[in-house]
Amino acid sequence: MPESETGDGIDYACAVTISTVPFSLSARLADYWRLTRMHKPIGILLLLWPTLWALWLAAGGFPPAKLLLIFIAGTVLMRGAGCAINDYADRDFDPHVARTRERPLAARRIAPQEALAVAAVLALAALWVAWPLPAQALWLAIPAVLIAASYPYAKRYTQWPQAHLGIAFSWGIPMAFAALRAPVSWGLVLALMAANFCWVIAYDTLYAMVDREDDLRIGVKSTAILFGRHDRLACALLHAMAVSILFVIGRHLDLGVFFDLGLLVAAGCAVWQQYRVRERVPTACFQAFLDNNYFGAAVFVGLLLDAWLGHPTW
Image (cartoon, one colour):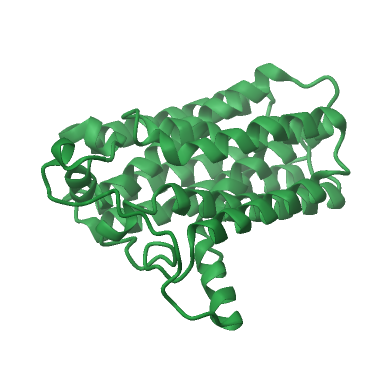
């Protein structure tokens, strides 16, 4: 990005091409661990919860243990690959953002080609893990990889990169149904994806509120910037839409009181997040983002208890 586009004097052409740290296997492995954010499992959990929702709904209760392990392992591996690609794409931006400047690639502890290699290895490992799945589920893995790989570049061209992430983080839903049901109940799949899509935009907007000032300075786009002073209202409406769609799904499938209680707890989490970000303090916005783990967990626990104790007819 030329200086004339930002006016801040930052040279974005100085991409990192080599690591400036002497090679050490233990240090390298630690940096790869940090590159893939394995030390920060929140991303794994936010990607995993809707996948678990889908597995439980597609199975009509507890899914087969082997299938559950495949999806958990695949989620961990693909999230790690996505983080590596994200840092590669943002290697010229991250050094100028307070929250990201110490990431291994931004700090020049590893080289860009290493990040690509790590992403490729993890993506191939995810494919190997998913190989026992039915063919219709495996075919859905192809767009999943393409969507995940293209997400980091969305913030350069659209003010809705959070919507792109919403699609990426919803793709485990059709894969879960494809692995368990033939034919796939696409109406139910799309409704569940819509609920998750709204939820992802809500929590990733909270995440983007943390970096809003830095993003404005360096020219990165986000819904936090797009929504402006209406950011909190937008997040509240998106959370409300997510809960409402899940409620409609519950009524359609005749889910019981435990699922409704899970939704009630999830709604309470959303209200608490609004209180947290009332003054838009970056640290509070980040904590509100993290709190969405409880939102996803509440919905899942509701499904789990409904399957275990509610004797569902779904």
